Length: 578
Image (tube, rainbow, N blue to C red; front, side):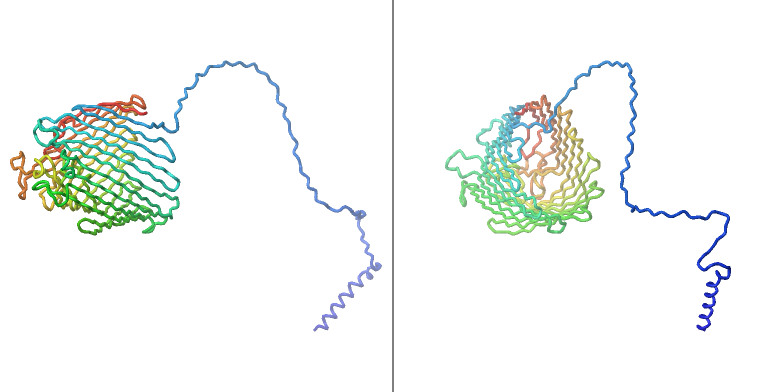
């Protein structure tokens, strides 16, 4: 097969090589006959090597000459009135001093002075003095003059990572036990005078790093006493109290949201020494000396954390208290609260439980009822409370709060007229355990600084273990406050207080309105309706005048059994800055 293919290719090749000879042409020459010119121009070689030309092509600048046209023009200059420039400083001016003086009906006098530092990054100090007195008398009652003078001073130094400071105070308060009808009674026999002086100091760290522990350490001291007896040998037979406390707070905050990320713990130690007379001795058959020394140690850790995009907030903690008196008692109180934000804080339902130990003092009792006697036992009070409610904002100007609270007070101080050591014009303290249910609500309206209105209402029910009623505590309370600012020139204020349902224990069954329940006589104190109106006219930024009308309804209501208040009071005066 391969042999035949080779022979075929050889024959074809020989035919191609013999064709020119067959047409009578020489070997290697080809002649083409045609009627057109088929000549080829001689070739010429270009000896230049190609190169790249990089040239920037510039655009020609076109010049359009302006036409010179002249037009006759004329103008008139109109005068411009100069502008009135009112310079307002960025920060309002502060004054070091503020004083208020006034006088009114029933020979009332008022004097008040503030003097403090102005703006400073490092130092803050000041002093405040107040005097208020009345030398009139309530009709048909024993002399009721009183005076009260207080002086306070404070100072603080602020550093970048810590601050420290302190203060001092002094109180001098005089009054009369006027709770009986005898306008000719001897003033000296029923007078009383409280005096108090003390100081406090603190050191506070505020480090920038959230992972660092910040703390506050403070001390305070207070000496409180009542009137010294006229006879020198009876100097010890008056109420005297010395209180010393150490209060600390420790706080640790981090950016994480875990149970112990926002932990705060308060550790407080308070010592209170109260003395009336000499211990284990008697000045009379019924009047014996009282010496009370009490130390309270409280540890109160609390932590808080959030959930559900910070809409849900939890607070959990407790209080461990040691009450060291005649015997040592340890108590544990719960602290817990939960709240949830609805519709971006428009409604916030909440519920919680809280308790604690309140260290009682003679100064606290006299602050609540200044007509108490000196020979009273001092007992600490335990408090428990469970509450729930809802609060929020209806509009940008209206806020509200409504809640229900169930409370339990152990060793709560109740005041009853003393018929053993006095003629009934002094009060003694009765301690009782009281269960309280309170339904309360409040609504507030505020239009910037122009108009403010607050309405607060409470309904209370009491159940005492050893008494049919919780003496002197109101059942219904209604408080209304309002302030109206007209162009920061005239400021009007109104407040109205209504209290009803308070009852007082009596020991004389012939007293008007006396009733008997569970073998105890009592009487209703009647409603308290107190309307007060005040106005202030700011003549300049530094000088203003004021007028106050108190107890406009002219009610001689009784805050305490046998002690009516002044029916109507008027006071006017001026204030100025310096």
